[in-house]
Length: 128
Image (tube, rainbow, N blue to C red; front, side):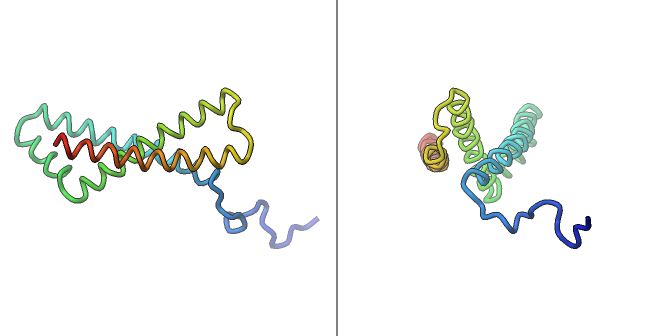
């Protein structure tokens, strides 16, 4: 039996992205982003411990356009990962497993993540 030129398994081009798959991949990606952000947080803390010169360098980067963009993305990653984790806990309890509820829960995760990120930055700007 010859397979000819057929692929052994379907490629990504065949599948249309669905919210379930996009959120699953996003949950993993935000976990990676949180790990990178934790390294930056440790760098910032070490710079603070090393003295004013090191801290000024770290604060200068984090206060720059790219630093603020990174912090904004990190904040979104934190809230998205948190909300998706709560969604998974709800699933573990046996709730929200029907397809319409899965889609609704996915959109709630996205909306809550955006809303909490914006709220966090509004509060940070008021306090700052």
